Length: 435
Image (cartoon, rainbow, N blue to C red; front, side, top):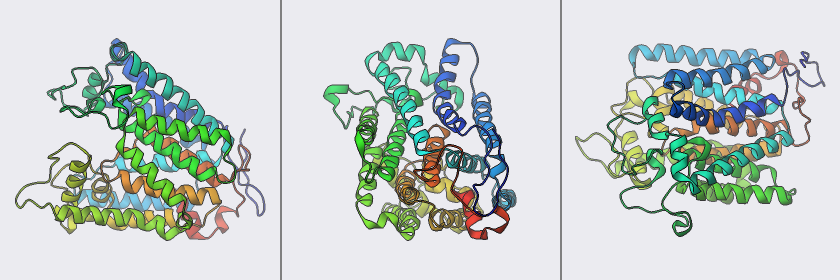
């Protein structure tokens, strides 16, 4: 079904099946598991090209579904962003256009969420949670059989994430972080679960931790005055996910989101805007306290504190050119999210997008709270990596945010009432691209 009209007081048109977004989110979460199985069986050599092709296909289908929702202001903002990146690339050859791919995931799945409803959001979470826990417990109980069916180590070597000469201390086919190594045990219930960190359908424990934080954030946003047994169960299952993954980040992030949710500050746009800035500033200060003159920043200790010190040292080590995307970083940025964003997008555009996200007039109370929870999620996760941008969990995050913006009572296929695109205030229209 496709509708294409927008008049004052009427609902803006949508295109395609509003349930389609749900299936694309699920596809984004599970396709790596399927490709890993295919590669393990030897049916196909799976490298970056094949993975990118599947991911771009999912995004292309989503883009087609939202084609009638794309307005002129969103196109202008993306054109300016592309122009900046093209120009900056001339002086900073290290700039990666992958940042455009990351923004594409945000915008496409946010708009797909706007076309859906809270009921669809619950259904999406339910499908993913069943898959995550089913595969996760198979991995936990039948670890060797799971590793034989899914050779995750070789999959990531072919993908280029792990070098072929990397030492496999765990001596398994699972991902490098599937075991903390160096004699370090689990943080949560090692006597029950053993040393293994579960990765489930995401193939790596960090993404399972991100998944639990995303579900927890959505529950905090929509459960006010309507807790019910379903939300209570989702809280419990989200906590179970970060326990299985032994994700210290997810447990801490969920605790911080809960503390913010219990205060009136969760609905203050300025707090949403300032949180990432304050955390990045604090991280840079930490780096200044650990300066090693003449020594390039590096991960000297591969744990949470070591990763934080590395991120802070890199930001402190930079000159103005790196902060504004006009000079390449002296050190790789893939293990520190703030550096990845700033060196590829530049401080000015980063602040611009953050401002559009934080100060856009709210469409619903749930969306306003979800936005604050997302600010906590990004502010903390970007300290230790850029995994928040992977489609495995980013698709779900922005889809859920979109459903909260559609409003709790909105039926599938209907978005919030608004004026025609041509008559909307420019700032209101522009901010959709950031969301």
